[in-house]
Length: 148
Image 1 (cartoon, rainbow, N blue to C red):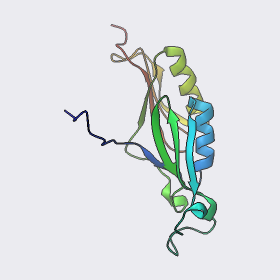
Image 2 (cartoon, one colour):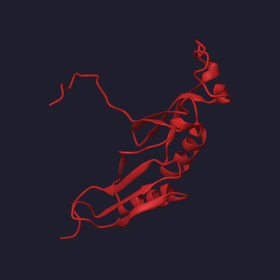
Image 3 (cartoon, rainbow, N blue to C red):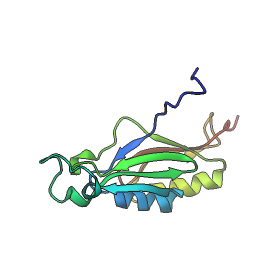
């Protein structure tokens, strides 16, 4: 069991390969994300080492944060286009009601790909999986048991 005084946290940090601004705007609209701190590579006190950034990435996002219902997600453009790509994990978005799950699922699926349509499962009255247009995998669910 974790020490309640511990300041250790694990937060998602997503690299969008040059599409960070677009992703933040999308998540604002789709799931009510609230943008926070944002810094571009050309705004840092120390310049990136020579050759670290792909040409044109000088004005890209070095670090940004957004909040979804009290949960912080950190993100960046990365240093080049190949820094994007999300394989081997999903973000699980748990919401309190079926209408809220339906709304967020549909918004996240816009220009994305549904891998499991929403429906009742033995563990949830509403659950579905998708990959959004940025390649981020999502599981959208309502907590509670599904139909018996």
